[in-house]
Amino acid sequence: MLVVILIYSLIFLTIETPGLIKNKQWLDLGVGSGFLLLAIGYGLETIYTWHLLPNPNIILNKLMPLTDAFFVFFHLPVG
Amino acid sequence: MEKNFIVSRQLAFMVFLSMLGSSFIYIPESATGRNSWLSTVMGAVFGLLILHLIISLQKMEPGVSILQMSKQKLGTVPGTVINIIYLSMLLLAVVLSLYDITLFMTLILPNTQELLLQASMFFAVIFFSYQGITSIGRAAELLLLPVLLLATLALIIPVSNINWFNFLPLLNDWRPIAAGSLISASWPFGQMVFMALFLPLVTDLQNSARTIYYWYLVAAILSVASTSVVIGIAGPETVTFMRFPFFQVIRGIPLPGLQRIELLFFLLWFVISGAVSNNLFAALMLGLKQSIRIKKTTTLIIPAALLIIVLCNYMFPGDIGFFFRTTAVIFLFLPLYILYPAIIFIAARWHNKKDPKSMYRLKG
Image (cartoon, rainbow over all chains, first blue to last red; front, side, top):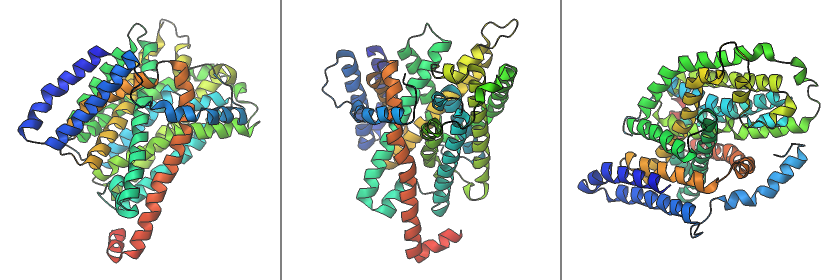
Protein backbone atom coordinates (compact mmCIF):
# COMPACT_ATOMS: atom_id res chain seq x y z
CA MET A 1 0.00 0.00 0.00
CA LEU A 2 2.82 2.41 0.84
CA VAL A 3 4.41 1.76 -2.53
CA VAL A 4 1.15 2.46 -4.38
CA ILE A 5 0.62 5.67 -2.41
CA LEU A 6 4.19 6.74 -3.11
CA ILE A 7 3.95 6.05 -6.84
CA TYR A 8 0.64 7.83 -7.29
CA SER A 9 1.78 10.79 -5.19
CA LEU A 10 5.01 11.13 -7.14
CA ILE A 11 3.12 11.00 -10.43
CA PHE A 12 0.77 13.74 -9.24
CA LEU A 13 3.59 15.90 -7.93
CA THR A 14 5.59 15.47 -11.11
CA ILE A 15 2.86 15.88 -13.71
CA GLU A 16 0.32 18.25 -12.20
CA THR A 17 1.91 20.35 -9.48
CA PRO A 18 4.50 22.32 -11.49
CA GLY A 19 1.87 23.49 -13.99
CA LEU A 20 -0.56 24.49 -11.26
CA ILE A 21 2.04 26.49 -9.39
CA LYS A 22 3.28 28.14 -12.58
CA ASN A 23 -0.25 29.17 -13.60
CA LYS A 24 -1.14 30.16 -10.03
CA GLN A 25 -4.18 27.87 -10.00
CA TRP A 26 -4.33 27.75 -6.25
CA LEU A 27 -7.89 26.38 -6.00
CA ASP A 28 -7.05 23.49 -8.29
CA LEU A 29 -3.83 22.83 -6.40
CA GLY A 30 -5.60 22.99 -3.05
CA VAL A 31 -8.39 20.62 -4.11
CA GLY A 32 -5.99 18.15 -5.73
CA SER A 33 -3.70 18.21 -2.71
CA GLY A 34 -6.68 17.83 -0.40
CA PHE A 35 -7.79 14.67 -2.18
CA LEU A 36 -4.23 13.38 -2.15
CA LEU A 37 -3.83 14.01 1.57
CA LEU A 38 -7.16 12.30 2.24
CA ALA A 39 -6.00 9.31 0.21
CA ILE A 40 -2.68 9.22 2.08
CA GLY A 41 -4.52 9.53 5.40
CA TYR A 42 -6.82 6.61 4.67
CA GLY A 43 -3.90 4.67 3.23
CA LEU A 44 -1.95 5.05 6.47
CA GLU A 45 -5.09 4.17 8.41
CA THR A 46 -5.35 0.96 6.40
CA ILE A 47 -1.75 0.06 7.17
CA TYR A 48 -1.49 1.13 10.81
CA THR A 49 -5.19 0.98 11.91
CA TRP A 50 -5.02 4.19 13.87
CA HIS A 51 -8.82 4.83 13.73
CA LEU A 52 -8.34 8.57 13.53
CA LEU A 53 -10.38 9.25 10.41
CA PRO A 54 -14.15 8.63 10.14
CA ASN A 55 -14.98 5.15 8.91
CA PRO A 56 -17.04 5.30 5.68
CA ASN A 57 -18.52 1.91 6.64
CA ILE A 58 -20.47 3.48 9.53
CA ILE A 59 -23.56 4.07 7.39
CA LEU A 60 -23.40 0.62 5.80
CA ASN A 61 -22.93 -1.00 9.21
CA LYS A 62 -25.99 0.80 10.54
CA LEU A 63 -27.99 -0.64 7.65
CA MET A 64 -26.99 -4.24 8.48
CA PRO A 65 -30.10 -4.95 10.64
CA LEU A 66 -32.21 -3.77 7.72
CA THR A 67 -30.24 -6.10 5.44
CA ASP A 68 -30.83 -9.04 7.78
CA ALA A 69 -34.56 -8.23 7.84
CA PHE A 70 -34.48 -7.96 4.04
CA PHE A 71 -33.02 -11.48 3.72
CA VAL A 72 -35.50 -12.94 6.18
CA PHE A 73 -38.59 -11.21 4.76
CA PHE A 74 -37.83 -12.10 1.15
CA HIS A 75 -36.84 -15.72 1.97
CA LEU A 76 -33.31 -15.28 0.60
CA PRO A 77 -30.47 -17.62 1.48
CA VAL A 78 -27.72 -15.97 3.53
CA GLY A 79 -24.05 -16.31 2.53
CA MET B 1 -10.19 16.27 -19.46
CA GLU B 2 -10.77 19.11 -21.92
CA LYS B 3 -11.99 17.14 -24.98
CA ASN B 4 -15.50 16.83 -23.77
CA PHE B 5 -18.10 16.33 -26.46
CA ILE B 6 -19.70 13.11 -27.57
CA VAL B 7 -22.65 12.07 -29.72
CA SER B 8 -25.63 9.97 -28.66
CA ARG B 9 -24.23 6.90 -30.38
CA GLN B 10 -21.03 7.06 -28.32
CA LEU B 11 -22.90 7.52 -25.06
CA ALA B 12 -25.18 4.64 -26.05
CA PHE B 13 -22.14 2.39 -26.53
CA MET B 14 -20.66 3.54 -23.22
CA VAL B 15 -23.93 2.69 -21.51
CA PHE B 16 -23.99 -0.69 -23.27
CA LEU B 17 -20.46 -1.64 -22.24
CA SER B 18 -21.05 -0.43 -18.69
CA MET B 19 -24.29 -2.36 -18.33
CA LEU B 20 -22.73 -5.50 -19.73
CA GLY B 21 -19.75 -5.11 -17.41
CA SER B 22 -21.96 -4.91 -14.36
CA SER B 23 -24.41 -7.64 -15.32
CA PHE B 24 -22.10 -10.19 -16.95
CA ILE B 25 -19.58 -10.21 -14.15
CA TYR B 26 -21.75 -10.07 -11.08
CA ILE B 27 -25.38 -11.21 -11.12
CA PRO B 28 -26.59 -10.27 -7.65
CA GLU B 29 -30.19 -11.20 -8.36
CA SER B 30 -29.13 -14.77 -9.17
CA ALA B 31 -29.19 -15.38 -5.41
CA THR B 32 -32.95 -15.19 -5.63
CA GLY B 33 -33.34 -18.51 -7.38
CA ARG B 34 -35.04 -19.97 -10.42
CA ASN B 35 -36.99 -16.83 -11.34
CA SER B 36 -33.93 -14.54 -11.29
CA TRP B 37 -34.39 -13.81 -14.97
CA LEU B 38 -37.73 -12.18 -14.09
CA SER B 39 -35.96 -10.05 -11.50
CA THR B 40 -33.48 -8.98 -14.17
CA VAL B 41 -36.37 -7.96 -16.43
CA MET B 42 -37.96 -5.92 -13.64
CA GLY B 43 -34.63 -4.30 -12.82
CA ALA B 44 -34.12 -3.45 -16.49
CA VAL B 45 -37.54 -1.77 -16.64
CA PHE B 46 -36.61 0.30 -13.59
CA GLY B 47 -33.34 1.33 -15.21
CA LEU B 48 -35.17 2.28 -18.38
CA LEU B 49 -37.48 4.56 -16.40
CA ILE B 50 -34.50 6.24 -14.76
CA LEU B 51 -32.84 6.65 -18.16
CA HIS B 52 -36.00 8.19 -19.60
CA LEU B 53 -36.28 10.54 -16.64
CA ILE B 54 -32.74 11.87 -16.92
CA ILE B 55 -32.94 12.24 -20.71
CA SER B 56 -36.25 14.12 -20.39
CA LEU B 57 -34.66 16.33 -17.76
CA GLN B 58 -31.68 17.03 -20.00
CA LYS B 59 -33.92 17.88 -22.96
CA MET B 60 -35.64 20.49 -20.81
CA GLU B 61 -32.30 22.18 -20.08
CA PRO B 62 -29.87 21.42 -22.91
CA GLY B 63 -26.22 21.70 -22.00
CA VAL B 64 -26.92 22.21 -18.30
CA SER B 65 -25.57 19.63 -15.89
CA ILE B 66 -27.96 17.88 -13.51
CA LEU B 67 -25.87 19.24 -10.63
CA GLN B 68 -26.40 22.81 -11.83
CA MET B 69 -30.09 22.11 -12.42
CA SER B 70 -30.58 20.93 -8.87
CA LYS B 71 -29.12 24.19 -7.51
CA GLN B 72 -31.09 26.34 -9.96
CA LYS B 73 -34.43 24.63 -9.38
CA LEU B 74 -34.24 23.68 -5.70
CA GLY B 75 -32.13 26.51 -4.37
CA THR B 76 -28.42 26.71 -3.68
CA VAL B 77 -28.39 25.05 -0.25
CA PRO B 78 -30.85 22.18 -0.85
CA GLY B 79 -29.35 21.62 -4.30
CA THR B 80 -25.84 21.49 -2.91
CA VAL B 81 -26.87 19.07 -0.17
CA ILE B 82 -28.46 16.59 -2.57
CA ASN B 83 -25.56 17.02 -4.99
CA ILE B 84 -23.14 16.04 -2.21
CA ILE B 85 -25.25 12.95 -1.49
CA TYR B 86 -25.33 12.12 -5.21
CA LEU B 87 -21.57 12.46 -5.64
CA SER B 88 -20.91 10.51 -2.42
CA MET B 89 -23.04 7.65 -3.74
CA LEU B 90 -21.17 7.85 -7.04
CA LEU B 91 -17.87 7.60 -5.17
CA LEU B 92 -19.22 4.59 -3.28
CA ALA B 93 -20.34 3.03 -6.59
CA VAL B 94 -16.83 3.42 -8.03
CA VAL B 95 -15.27 1.85 -4.91
CA LEU B 96 -17.74 -1.06 -4.99
CA SER B 97 -17.23 -1.69 -8.68
CA LEU B 98 -13.46 -1.62 -8.26
CA TYR B 99 -13.54 -4.19 -5.46
CA ASP B 100 -15.95 -6.39 -7.40
CA ILE B 101 -13.83 -6.25 -10.51
CA THR B 102 -10.66 -6.94 -8.52
CA LEU B 103 -12.20 -10.07 -7.04
CA PHE B 104 -13.27 -11.12 -10.50
CA MET B 105 -9.86 -10.53 -12.06
CA THR B 106 -8.21 -12.67 -9.34
CA LEU B 107 -10.16 -15.61 -10.83
CA ILE B 108 -8.41 -15.05 -14.13
CA LEU B 109 -5.07 -13.96 -12.63
CA PRO B 110 -5.02 -15.87 -9.33
CA ASN B 111 -1.36 -15.26 -8.51
CA THR B 112 -1.59 -11.48 -8.79
CA GLN B 113 -2.04 -9.46 -5.62
CA GLU B 114 -5.34 -7.57 -5.40
CA LEU B 115 -3.73 -4.21 -4.67
CA LEU B 116 -1.50 -4.59 -7.71
CA LEU B 117 -4.53 -5.40 -9.87
CA GLN B 118 -6.36 -2.34 -8.58
CA ALA B 119 -3.40 -0.02 -9.08
CA SER B 120 -2.78 -1.40 -12.60
CA MET B 121 -6.42 -1.21 -13.67
CA PHE B 122 -6.65 2.32 -12.45
CA PHE B 123 -3.62 3.34 -14.46
CA ALA B 124 -5.71 2.46 -17.52
CA VAL B 125 -8.65 4.42 -16.10
CA ILE B 126 -6.37 7.41 -15.42
CA PHE B 127 -5.02 7.24 -18.96
CA PHE B 128 -8.51 7.32 -20.48
CA SER B 129 -9.59 10.10 -18.14
CA TYR B 130 -6.65 12.24 -19.22
CA GLN B 131 -7.61 11.72 -22.87
CA GLY B 132 -11.09 13.11 -22.30
CA ILE B 133 -14.69 11.99 -22.69
CA THR B 134 -14.45 12.16 -26.49
CA SER B 135 -11.71 9.51 -26.46
CA ILE B 136 -13.73 7.35 -24.07
CA GLY B 137 -16.67 7.61 -26.46
CA ARG B 138 -14.52 6.71 -29.47
CA ALA B 139 -13.00 3.77 -27.62
CA ALA B 140 -16.53 2.55 -26.87
CA GLU B 141 -17.32 2.75 -30.60
CA LEU B 142 -14.25 0.70 -31.49
CA LEU B 143 -14.80 -1.94 -28.84
CA LEU B 144 -18.52 -2.39 -29.29
CA LEU B 145 -18.47 -4.88 -32.16
CA PRO B 146 -15.90 -7.34 -30.70
CA VAL B 147 -17.60 -7.17 -27.30
CA LEU B 148 -21.04 -7.72 -28.82
CA LEU B 149 -19.77 -10.70 -30.83
CA LEU B 150 -17.98 -12.26 -27.87
CA ALA B 151 -20.95 -11.67 -25.56
CA THR B 152 -23.30 -13.31 -28.05
CA LEU B 153 -20.90 -16.23 -28.44
CA ALA B 154 -20.60 -16.54 -24.66
CA LEU B 155 -24.38 -16.86 -24.50
CA ILE B 156 -24.76 -19.25 -27.44
CA ILE B 157 -22.03 -21.75 -26.54
CA PRO B 158 -23.59 -22.90 -23.22
CA VAL B 159 -27.17 -23.13 -24.55
CA SER B 160 -26.97 -26.87 -25.25
CA ASN B 161 -26.11 -27.46 -21.56
CA ILE B 162 -29.21 -25.72 -20.23
CA ASN B 163 -31.57 -27.85 -18.20
CA TRP B 164 -34.92 -26.18 -18.86
CA PHE B 165 -36.48 -27.86 -15.82
CA ASN B 166 -34.32 -25.57 -13.65
CA PHE B 167 -36.74 -22.76 -14.47
CA LEU B 168 -39.75 -24.63 -13.08
CA PRO B 169 -41.95 -23.99 -11.27
CA LEU B 170 -42.47 -20.46 -12.54
CA LEU B 171 -43.61 -17.74 -10.14
CA ASN B 172 -43.92 -20.13 -7.22
CA ASP B 173 -42.91 -17.49 -4.66
CA TRP B 174 -43.18 -13.74 -5.26
CA ARG B 175 -40.77 -12.77 -2.48
CA PRO B 176 -37.45 -13.81 -4.05
CA ILE B 177 -38.56 -12.26 -7.35
CA ALA B 178 -39.36 -8.99 -5.61
CA ALA B 179 -36.05 -9.07 -3.74
CA GLY B 180 -34.14 -9.82 -6.92
CA SER B 181 -35.91 -6.95 -8.67
CA LEU B 182 -34.82 -4.55 -5.95
CA ILE B 183 -31.26 -5.91 -6.03
CA SER B 184 -30.95 -5.69 -9.81
CA ALA B 185 -32.58 -2.24 -9.82
CA SER B 186 -29.92 -1.11 -7.37
CA TRP B 187 -27.10 -2.78 -9.33
CA PRO B 188 -26.60 -2.61 -12.29
CA PHE B 189 -29.65 -1.01 -13.87
CA GLY B 190 -30.20 1.92 -11.55
CA GLN B 191 -26.66 3.20 -12.12
CA MET B 192 -28.11 4.90 -15.21
CA VAL B 193 -28.67 7.85 -12.89
CA PHE B 194 -24.91 8.44 -12.87
CA MET B 195 -24.88 8.63 -16.69
CA ALA B 196 -26.81 11.89 -16.29
CA LEU B 197 -23.47 13.64 -15.84
CA PHE B 198 -22.52 12.81 -19.44
CA LEU B 199 -25.76 14.04 -20.98
CA PRO B 200 -24.85 17.76 -21.19
CA LEU B 201 -21.89 16.76 -23.35
CA VAL B 202 -24.01 14.96 -25.92
CA THR B 203 -24.29 17.26 -28.91
CA ASP B 204 -27.24 15.59 -30.67
CA LEU B 205 -29.37 14.49 -27.72
CA GLN B 206 -32.52 16.28 -28.91
CA ASN B 207 -32.59 14.32 -32.18
CA SER B 208 -30.83 11.05 -31.45
CA ALA B 209 -31.66 10.08 -27.87
CA ARG B 210 -33.42 6.95 -29.17
CA THR B 211 -30.00 5.40 -29.86
CA ILE B 212 -29.28 5.41 -26.14
CA TYR B 213 -32.56 3.66 -25.41
CA TYR B 214 -31.94 1.03 -28.11
CA TRP B 215 -28.51 0.06 -26.82
CA TYR B 216 -29.72 0.08 -23.23
CA LEU B 217 -32.39 -2.43 -24.28
CA VAL B 218 -29.80 -4.56 -26.09
CA ALA B 219 -27.72 -4.64 -22.90
CA ALA B 220 -30.83 -5.48 -20.87
CA ILE B 221 -31.71 -8.37 -23.21
CA LEU B 222 -28.17 -9.76 -22.97
CA SER B 223 -28.33 -9.40 -19.16
CA VAL B 224 -31.58 -11.35 -19.00
CA ALA B 225 -30.04 -13.97 -21.27
CA SER B 226 -26.94 -14.30 -19.07
CA THR B 227 -29.07 -14.69 -15.94
CA SER B 228 -31.15 -17.32 -17.71
CA VAL B 229 -28.06 -19.23 -18.88
CA VAL B 230 -26.70 -19.23 -15.33
CA ILE B 231 -29.93 -20.55 -13.81
CA GLY B 232 -30.43 -23.03 -16.64
CA ILE B 233 -26.99 -24.58 -16.32
CA ALA B 234 -26.01 -24.20 -12.66
CA GLY B 235 -29.47 -24.53 -11.18
CA PRO B 236 -31.13 -22.26 -8.63
CA GLU B 237 -29.54 -23.87 -5.56
CA THR B 238 -25.93 -23.99 -6.83
CA VAL B 239 -25.98 -20.46 -8.19
CA THR B 240 -26.56 -18.98 -4.72
CA PHE B 241 -23.04 -20.11 -3.79
CA MET B 242 -21.39 -18.69 -6.90
CA ARG B 243 -19.64 -15.39 -6.60
CA PHE B 244 -19.42 -14.72 -10.36
CA PRO B 245 -22.01 -17.08 -11.76
CA PHE B 246 -21.78 -16.37 -15.49
CA PHE B 247 -18.00 -16.65 -15.56
CA GLN B 248 -18.03 -19.81 -13.44
CA VAL B 249 -20.69 -21.37 -15.65
CA ILE B 250 -18.69 -20.58 -18.80
CA ARG B 251 -15.58 -22.05 -17.20
CA GLY B 252 -17.42 -25.28 -16.56
CA ILE B 253 -18.42 -25.82 -20.19
CA PRO B 254 -16.48 -28.80 -21.59
CA LEU B 255 -15.10 -28.12 -25.04
CA PRO B 256 -12.60 -30.47 -26.72
CA GLY B 257 -9.10 -29.04 -26.90
CA LEU B 258 -9.87 -26.05 -24.64
CA GLN B 259 -8.87 -26.34 -20.99
CA ARG B 260 -9.45 -22.76 -19.95
CA ILE B 261 -12.35 -21.68 -22.08
CA GLU B 262 -12.84 -18.53 -20.06
CA LEU B 263 -9.62 -17.18 -21.56
CA LEU B 264 -11.27 -17.32 -24.97
CA PHE B 265 -13.38 -14.46 -23.72
CA PHE B 266 -10.58 -12.63 -21.93
CA LEU B 267 -11.09 -9.54 -24.10
CA LEU B 268 -14.77 -9.53 -23.16
CA TRP B 269 -14.15 -9.71 -19.40
CA PHE B 270 -11.31 -7.22 -19.51
CA VAL B 271 -13.10 -4.61 -21.63
CA ILE B 272 -16.48 -4.73 -19.94
CA SER B 273 -15.01 -4.72 -16.44
CA GLY B 274 -12.78 -1.80 -17.42
CA ALA B 275 -15.75 0.03 -18.94
CA VAL B 276 -17.65 0.02 -15.65
CA SER B 277 -14.79 1.56 -13.68
CA ASN B 278 -13.89 3.91 -16.50
CA ASN B 279 -17.36 5.31 -17.04
CA LEU B 280 -18.20 5.69 -13.36
CA PHE B 281 -14.83 7.32 -12.67
CA ALA B 282 -15.23 9.69 -15.62
CA ALA B 283 -18.70 10.60 -14.35
CA LEU B 284 -17.26 11.27 -10.90
CA MET B 285 -14.55 13.54 -12.35
CA LEU B 286 -17.17 15.47 -14.34
CA GLY B 287 -19.33 15.82 -11.27
CA LEU B 288 -16.49 17.01 -9.06
CA LYS B 289 -15.31 19.51 -11.67
CA GLN B 290 -18.80 20.99 -11.96
CA SER B 291 -19.27 21.11 -8.20
CA ILE B 292 -15.93 22.50 -7.14
CA ARG B 293 -15.49 24.69 -10.25
CA ILE B 294 -11.87 23.89 -10.79
CA LYS B 295 -10.39 24.79 -14.15
CA LYS B 296 -8.85 21.45 -15.06
CA THR B 297 -10.32 18.04 -14.26
CA THR B 298 -6.88 16.48 -14.73
CA THR B 299 -5.87 17.94 -11.36
CA LEU B 300 -8.27 15.62 -9.60
CA ILE B 301 -7.77 12.44 -11.59
CA ILE B 302 -4.69 10.98 -9.89
CA PRO B 303 -5.60 11.95 -6.30
CA ALA B 304 -9.18 10.70 -6.76
CA ALA B 305 -7.93 7.43 -8.26
CA LEU B 306 -5.61 6.90 -5.30
CA LEU B 307 -8.42 7.74 -2.88
CA ILE B 308 -10.67 5.15 -4.51
CA ILE B 309 -7.99 2.44 -4.36
CA VAL B 310 -7.27 3.23 -0.73
CA LEU B 311 -10.95 3.34 0.25
CA CYS B 312 -11.50 0.02 -1.52
CA ASN B 313 -8.88 -1.60 0.71
CA TYR B 314 -9.92 0.29 3.84
CA MET B 315 -13.65 -0.39 3.58
CA PHE B 316 -13.46 -3.98 2.31
CA PRO B 317 -10.53 -5.89 3.79
CA GLY B 318 -12.40 -9.15 3.12
CA ASP B 319 -14.95 -10.76 0.85
CA ILE B 320 -17.61 -11.65 3.43
CA GLY B 321 -17.99 -8.10 4.70
CA PHE B 322 -18.17 -6.89 1.10
CA PHE B 323 -21.02 -9.27 0.30
CA PHE B 324 -23.23 -8.10 3.18
CA ARG B 325 -22.42 -4.44 2.70
CA THR B 326 -23.26 -4.60 -1.01
CA THR B 327 -26.72 -5.78 -0.03
CA ALA B 328 -26.98 -2.91 2.43
CA VAL B 329 -26.28 -0.37 -0.32
CA ILE B 330 -29.70 -1.15 -1.83
CA PHE B 331 -31.13 1.07 0.90
CA LEU B 332 -28.80 3.90 -0.11
CA PHE B 333 -28.81 3.56 -3.88
CA LEU B 334 -32.49 2.92 -4.57
CA PRO B 335 -33.82 6.05 -2.84
CA LEU B 336 -31.13 8.08 -4.62
CA TYR B 337 -31.96 6.58 -8.02
CA ILE B 338 -35.64 7.38 -7.62
CA LEU B 339 -35.66 10.61 -5.65
CA TYR B 340 -32.69 12.56 -7.05
CA PRO B 341 -33.82 12.81 -10.71
CA ALA B 342 -37.52 12.83 -9.79
CA ILE B 343 -37.24 15.78 -7.40
CA ILE B 344 -35.19 17.80 -9.87
CA PHE B 345 -37.57 16.89 -12.70
CA ILE B 346 -40.63 17.98 -10.75
CA ALA B 347 -38.92 21.19 -9.65
CA ALA B 348 -37.81 21.89 -13.23
CA ARG B 349 -41.33 21.36 -14.61
CA TRP B 350 -42.76 23.62 -11.93
CA HIS B 351 -40.17 26.31 -12.67
CA ASN B 352 -40.75 26.06 -16.41
CA LYS B 353 -44.46 26.55 -15.97
CA LYS B 354 -43.86 29.68 -13.91
CA ASP B 355 -41.09 31.10 -16.11
CA PRO B 356 -42.31 32.19 -19.59
CA LYS B 357 -38.81 32.32 -21.09
CA SER B 358 -38.17 28.71 -20.35
CA MET B 359 -41.42 27.80 -22.12
CA TYR B 360 -39.64 28.68 -25.37
CA ARG B 361 -36.80 26.38 -24.36
CA LEU B 362 -39.30 23.57 -23.83
CA LYS B 363 -40.64 24.02 -27.33
CA GLY B 364 -37.07 23.70 -28.51
